[in-house]
Length: 180
Ligand code: 5GP
Ligand code: MG
Image (cartoon, rainbow, N blue to C red; front, side):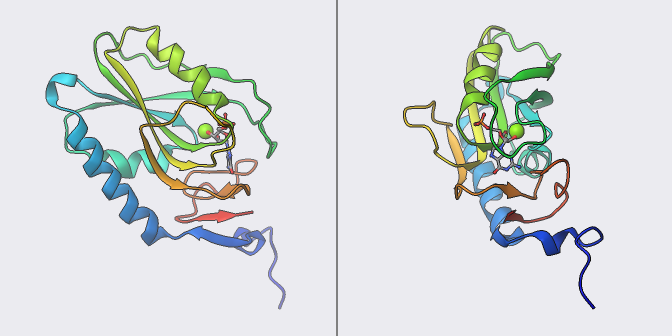
């Protein structure tokens, strides 16, 4: 019997790029590196960029043993398209006071860098002691763009889904990352 892509979203996927096991291992490593970088006096705030970072964020904060607060922001740039439109809207702005505190932005994937170059100044306006970025995936599409402090994996240029990443809100729940 032929598989129906509507009832089995996995069958529409091309290939697994990062397995559940590979992701788990790397996220733990990132957690250890990040824990070493901050101390209690930094009053760290970890801000997840919704929606794509939600699974990465959930796994990452459990691998970080420096005390910290958690918040989220929501930025929209892609809509349902698979190519960046290059204009970023802030749909939810974190309410946490960032004054004098270390901010760590958690991104799912950096593509052109347009989202980050919009988000970082908005965080800096609020007087944090520092703003750093950890991204799970990096496509390295633009030369000379701001380099995230931590990168999970260099990613292929193809459109990726799973582990929080969607295509038209589909596939976010997959425990691995695949190219569509
Ligand atoms: P940038 O602003 O760097 O061009 O794009 C960053 C954002 O675009 C990411 O946070 C993510 O939401 C989206 N994006 C970029 N590449 C991909 C991809 O391969 N798959 C998915 N699902 N989203 C992507
Ligand atoms: Mg995103």
